[in-house]
Length: 217
Image (tube, rainbow, N blue to C red; front, side, top):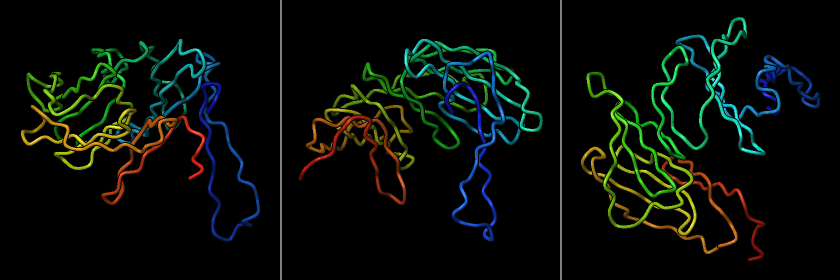
């Protein structure tokens, strides 16, 4: 929500009047981040906390990650981050490292992938041991990933990268993402639209546009 807070909308039972308007209850109103927006939330049930991504949505002058206790709603930590970076934090909120990036996705069990406006694709190992969280650049052939603005896992060997010109790219790897290649392109033909994200459901790929005024055709 706007203003650096978190709200809850309580869903009523099936016997309630369907015409009754649901109300929002403010759970968190943090004065330290007033004027910024809560841009994303994740519930960390194992640690009984709520993680909140915070940002200045107008001037792009502030970004941070905050954690709140789910039982008391007291703030556990607030870590200010640099804009346009991928950052790794310890459980207490202290910064481990930052990587200049725009996107981030988790691949179940082993690694994470991120892509940059500089057209680079990274693999971040999440395995235990001395090489944990090691960052490697993936060698990509068959096309450029420049202006990628959204990334989604299609399968363990395929990812979809949404962006502009073309609006979507299919990238595949056969060696656990040590190398990869662009194997497919999708151009919507609507050059007045900008694709920002891709979502995969039941094998189908759905694209989200941030700019565009529809088409008369």
